[in-house]
Image (cartoon, rainbow, N blue to C red; front, side, top):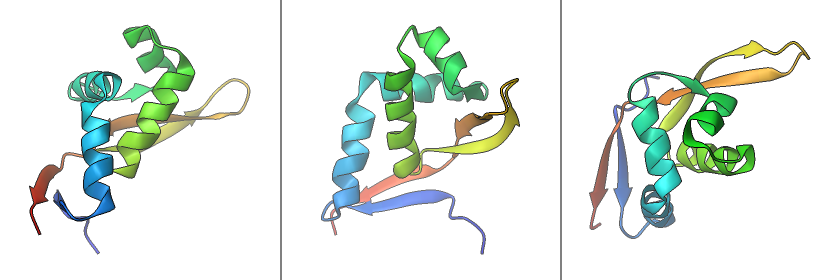
Length: 98
């Protein structure tokens, strides 16, 4: 089943609250802005935005939950840990009253 090219949210849904909270967060908006140009890893975003990894991790999690970003690919670090590459989900966000 192909993925929808948009995120459709009713104002009555809890997801609308989550989406607006995520978009009102300045760090989330900065992450979205950076991801509009290229893919980034969590550590690259942390360095670029001069924010702690924990802050970046939290915001990436929120952005993924509302469907605005996705993990495009990953690679393994020297220590064998999976490193995700994040990118925009390229979706239109539609918020409706009902």
